[in-house]
Image (tube, rainbow over all chains, first blue to last red; front, side, top):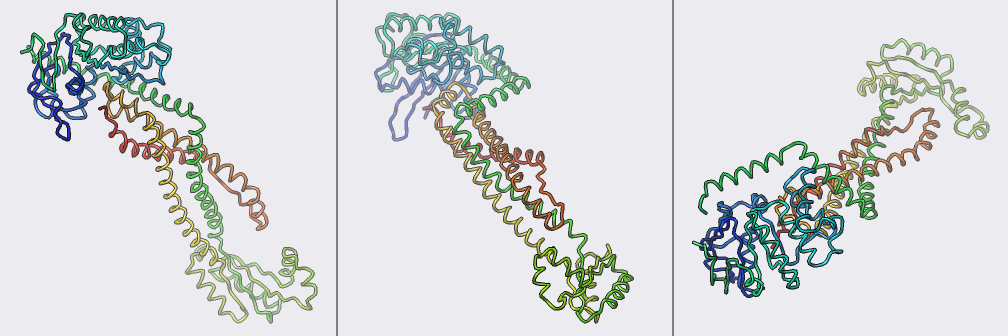
Length: 223
Length: 328
């Protein structure tokens, strides 16, 4: 699903955030990405999300080389990916329903399909009763679940999560991770950046560990 | 990747699916209607500031539109007089009434002349005292100072300026004539003045259109800044530039439409306020001239102009500012 071959990312000014990273995450796999802050976790996720472009090396997503893809085609690649952020980036002037519907509206689904799919996603995350509420009225855990609903409503092939439990207490964090495991069971590939080592160790998933922009350990099935 | 071939095919299939969905006309219209309504709702939520923006646009549109209509009316006025430019031939005071009548009869036979009306000094005096309010003054005079006058209508094939001046020269050369005056002159001068006014209005119109463009552009720029977060999020979850652009373009179009409708109301009201005094003035000139506004034609023109300016203004703003907002 994600393949990095000898990828380096150097920011303007000379700072090398990632050096010579190679790994391969299989379709349908779930993995954690760890490392101290500044190790390059965010940069790696931004490369996958095509927010940043690699300075060197090749990046494949779902078998497609996206290293040199044109700007115009980036949106269509992003529609295959669900993003979950630490600060969840919900739009506060819209209801929960409208927030979750956004990816479907962008992709041009029909009105009837949107309602059906949004309700299905909200139902899966236990938010069906909150669809008419505005995000401000929700708790932190609920807001994060709305963010997840928005990420999965489009049935993406890949989920990217950047510190999804950063603001949550351990119980809620565990709940969120259990949700990810559920999505992984139905075939969604998931890459989660987190520094919550105790939680990661509780769960039995491969771990990509970054240290100063280099890969310290890799997923077992990498080539 | 174990089976890149299959994945490639799947990806292509996904693409085709997406394309089919995008191009389906019903979805396309539904989406545009949705965005148009969304933009409308957004304007309604900030209705006070939206109304003020629309009002400024309206004033800028109403100014040239109103002036242009006024000009059209003046042209219509001069046009009605163009075809029947008459000539005034004042006879010498020494010419007696019988000779004047004789002359009028003679002149009627000229091929250039359509009709001749003789205004005797007595008739002229009567008319003058009726209309000028100088009756008392004229009574004080011993004798009538007014000359006899022939009002000559040229035949229809002699109304063009060259033929009319030739006819005037023919009248001037008559021994009885004191002064032959072509009334066409002031019509020509008016036409020249109107041409200047038309240029002036064109220039003003262009400047005000530019002002509307900048106004809408600036409003949309602020709107883009206010919705920065939303733009970032939608771009991050796969919105194309077109998708992000669309609500702002509709917003510009709505501003144009509302500005145009308000401008229309302003022009119609202005003309309504002017119509009575103008009819009054026209009455004083024995004319039944009325101001005309062609309300529906005007409305369509204004709305069309408003939409074009709104679209162009927001397009410029969006082009300049939207690309700069990329997720980081």
